[in-house]
Amino acid sequence: MLELLAAPPVDPLWDLAAEFAADPRPERLDLVLGVYRDHTGVTPVMAAVREAEIRLAERSDSKEYRALSGNTAFNRAMLAMVLGTETPTGSATAVQTVAGTGALRLLADLVRQTRPGTTVWISDPAYVNHRPILEGAGLRVRTFGRLDSTGMIEDLGAARRGDVVLLQGCCHNPTGVDPSFETWEELAGLAAANGWVPFVDLAYHGLGDGLDADLRATRMLADRLPEVLIAVSCSKNFGLYSDRTGCAIVLGSSRQTLRHVETALQNAARTMYSMPPDHGAAVVATVLEDERLRAAWLAELEVMRHRITANRADLVAHLRALGREEQATSLARQKGMFSMLPLTPDQMRRMRRQSGIYGTSSGRINIAGVPGQRIPFLAQGIARALETPRAVRSV
Image (cartoon, rainbow, N blue to C red; front, side, top):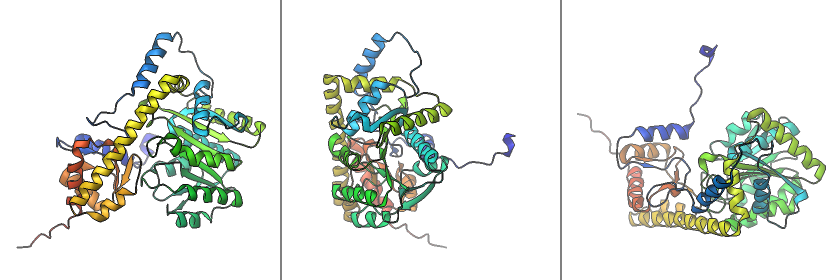
């Protein structure tokens, strides 16, 4: 049977990560996977998270099953954090998921159950896993190609009633370019007028302009529209990458509708993994429900955000010093963990080959993964990749 299986495509990010691991050069630089690293190049366990884990270990007396919806304290905390405490609890429901990826897939399955063959719009470029997740759930995918105010509104003017539009709530991956709040307000008006449903992917909140600022657009959509889908990840802002902690949030117009939604999400989860692992969710709930731990977490998150901002500003300054003004100006407009270098796939390969600097072929690099002292090396690698290769003289 297995011999009938054709060779499937490899995941491009993890393929690059494997290539990096096999590279023997000690100076090589991994900017492929989206993980935060401190100035020493380590992905740390946040102090608030570590203290929460100690508390949980001290009082843990059972590993009994949780409910299909996961950790209820975590779900309440996610609703309060994402939507704001003033949001009526009857207008939204939440289900714990296996990270943000699990939330995206469960919500995609919900859309398919509700209306098979629904068209979902995603940005181009988009997060590399958006299209596979949506198409894996049996949905049709269309793209809008511009993230500036006028272009985005024009492109999404073609979205029809019943369509779903997947929007990244902040710190767009891979471009680092976000719509202005005024554009978000226009999008809310367009959704209300044309009848499409926003599907917000929140993976980097707290790492752009600050937690509340990064959640402002999502909260506005939730306030103005009758239905909104939200996928939330705790990987980046809590550092729980391998604990796979996330949440699917749905806003609806009635309690009965939301009861149906919660059951549908539970049923979908039951067929895939039954229930999500509890550890990461219990950690997040412990942090957010304790005033001192929450304050400590927010302070740590601010340190991370400022380091990412400083890395980008430093890279911009070094590129300008090397005479690369066009590239510097492009990077200066971006925010969040990722930056999109204005390099071609050939130039990205050249940078990998010449300098051992690994980013995606599309030009995306993880600016949050660069140790501060390696910024000059990165800038020089970009400048070298931009140089026109010398032609080989024939003899």
